[in-house]
Length: 226
Image 1 (tube, rainbow, N blue to C red):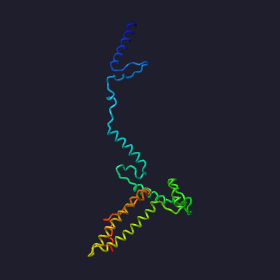
Image 2 (cartoon, rainbow, N blue to C red; image 1 turned 180 degrees about the vertical axis):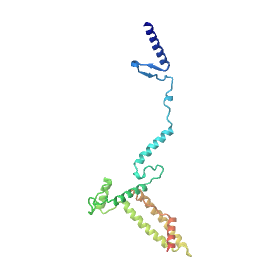
Image 3 (cartoon, one colour; image 1 turned 30 degrees about the vertical axis):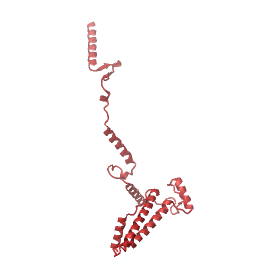
Image 4 (cartoon, rainbow, N blue to C red; image 1 turned 135 degrees about the horizontal axis):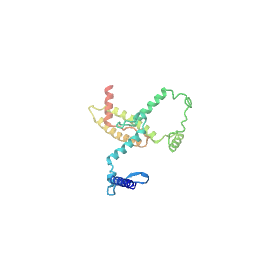
């Protein structure tokens, strides 16, 4: 009996020695856990440094996804496509037409009644108040008055160009040369007004200035067609 007990103790001691050699240490209640790595191993080997390019690509992907979610469903998923404000406007117009065809604009509240244009719920409150004050005093914003002035000046300028063009190619070109020099100076003045107008006008209402070469081509086409 004593010999059998001694052999059992020797077997347990041998088993514990093999476990220790395998890198596993005994824990109470028969639970085993692997030994921690030695302190001589470097942290960089456990946690490799992230490549900057991969991190940049991931951030770019996240930004693209966020921006893509802001677009209408019709324009999503087109990462390489050039999206402009016109594309969004086209989507809005298509939705409006579909809604009209489905009759969603029928029997709306206030149908057949005059619109109340005294207030603009979509405008900035301070700006809306300013416009109402101008309207009561029968005045228009500066950009409205400037737009009218520019259009009147352009009509007058083109009429003067047509009159001067009748002297072009005549025996005495001095009238055409003098008139063209004066018209070129007037273009500069008109374009200065256009530049100021584009600075103060609401977004989307900007206009293009005049160019002498394009106006001459336009005049030649009109004379050829007539």
